[in-house]
Length: 414
Image: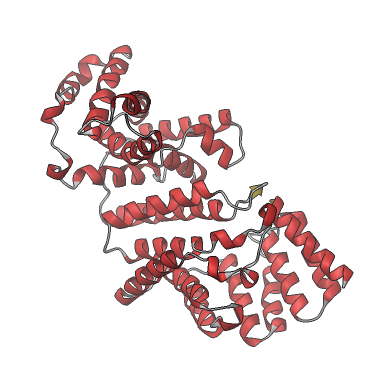
């Protein structure tokens, strides 16, 4: 007998490797995923009862191959695929054990991640397909995470698979400029998944831990396969340093607790130490990329013993560097906060007000929340209250709304 939880964890770990191997051999992403899902289902029913086989990956590949054979025959593709299928309906003992396999087996997971982040797909489709194919989340889980009907997510994932199939992209790691471009897309998708998990854009929960945890797991996988890439290390460091504060971010009933008021003894010291080590090593390789710089900023926050001890001049300098290579309104908003903490709230307010004509952020609740905070620092209580209320109207996150309304009510009562 095998523990159900251990079996589930093992299957989630093996799923992208098995899917990558089957796609590599057959070339059909859609049919391969159907076959692998059936193999995973068979394992989830059989392994807890009969025990995990000695070579679980080979077992899953064999079962998926048999199912894919049936699917191919059902689509009258038997002749075109006969040779490939014959090579992959092998006895288990003919599959090399894990210790004897080449690195290409683990590379399949990375190739699969690159495939899911193909430029033919929209960012929303890239995220959905990555979580489905590489993360092992069910369509229902992904739909719940992004608060859309399951049928909508099913259609989105199906269209993404069709786009991949029609693109004719080969199942291999891209090279040269294409590899750099696709890796950038991979990192961006993981960054978006993590952010949605750490600060959900809508719904009753402030955080969706399953998403941020999955983003960290996938970032670790990419870092393991590309250990010399400084931006990969920077992204993993950023996730770890940010996620280290997760437990302290919410109070009773899931209420939001801002960083300045968090109990820092609840921060994850192991995650902070790992993140600091990663970003320190990455920055030493130079030149610094945007994920490395954001990780460095997170490290400065995490290493401060309390809010008053935060090294804001260092954070300001890091944001100045970040603006040179990643100038966007969100970075400028964070830069304005750092300026306010070093040079005073009115200097920061001038920068925030300069962002209001920018359509990319004008409707974002964060702009108005920051403005409210800086107005309060400047002693303009009525204006600060109005900004907090404007921010509350612009967010669909219920914990954010409650926090912003509480800030406004506090100013009205004092």
